[in-house]
Length: 112
Length: 113
Image (cartoon, one colour):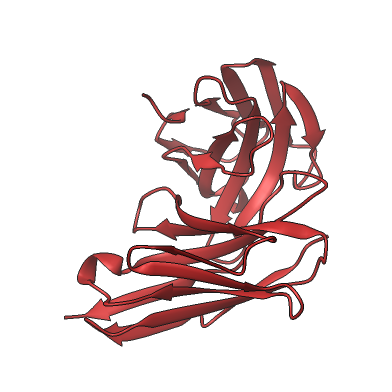
């Protein structure tokens, strides 16, 4: 099955700086890569996703890049704000089904 | 528009008791997923349904766990008998046919003492 690895496990940044989280996946059949944000005690919320026919996608201060050859994808948050503090999960899904395999999560802390 | 609804939000029970968690997917969504989240194991997919039919239950930890989806608007996850190691947050998520985008419910925090 799919194996998704996520790094780093924790990330502390100064407000206004950028944050980058990286994930790798093992199954070359994976074609959908979402990112979820989970605030303390809340549900995971889909914030952005990318499909394998696209190399980069942006939505305001967040962007995701995908390198299919290397089987890795990254989340970039620019101009970080205190409300960006949360746990971020990457995931991957195959063309064969709709199961999501999640990374272990990255706890992002934005220092004011 | 209501999102995924789960009940109860919190459940505290004693070891050996039966626990039933409930989920109502977003109206019109025909895929439903049950996840378990713990600090040690992260987010694990337990089972998912497509058009009320279980498609993959390989994540169900053992026979004490069972899930049903009797109709398009309701699913249950049952643990019988419950054990302290079942303590976790259980999430239900749903998605539209042909879409990978999954939307999570608020979760049920289960504590087994």
